Image 1: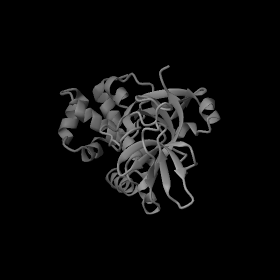
Image 2 (image 1 turned 90 degrees about the vertical axis):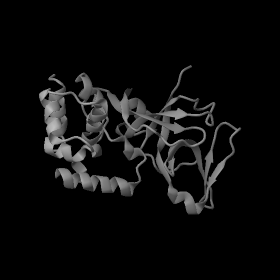
Image 3 (image 1 turned 90 degrees about the horizontal axis):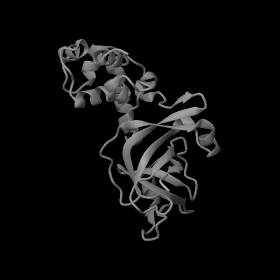
Image 4 (image 1 turned 60 degrees about the horizontal axis):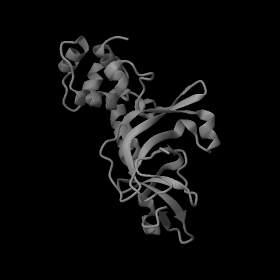
Length: 251
């Protein structure tokens, strides 16, 4: 299994080696990285988190070597505007020499194990109440489902993720603290379905209705909350993260 230094070296190789990793880290020198790899010193948790993020390496594996899958994902892609994501990918590609399509964060996270698919669970919350900007965007773990179960829900299994819903505006359908499964392949709005939406950096969980005048209505299942209307000239500011296809809730 190797020690922490071996795992840091292996993570560095994902982006082209220790020199390339040094270029990607904000405040870690090449010699310091060498000390981490040799075991002369141990990195702070914040450094390990940054290594995990820039190399798209599973943080649990990096810390302990015990995770089943060392692959990770840069979860900010969920909320990052496409133009910023493109700029980031081009900069990383230029720094590492890795084609954009082959960058770790552009690989699929989900992995099939026999009949099961392991989907990433993000440590972010989508507000089922007043919009709240997520303050932590990282993969917290994985959730396993039978791939056929997700397909029967109309979902694309390897395009799904799990996030927490916060607030009471979607009760009783989605209670506060419910884990929701989101299919990111479903970004075209279908009337009456529930979606995770990015509006100006806020993540919301709402039932969506499209009107004939091209406006969009964001409907809360809790009738104490009024319907919110997105005017036709503002619809472009609304980004559909994906459709909610399943709820994991306590009885």
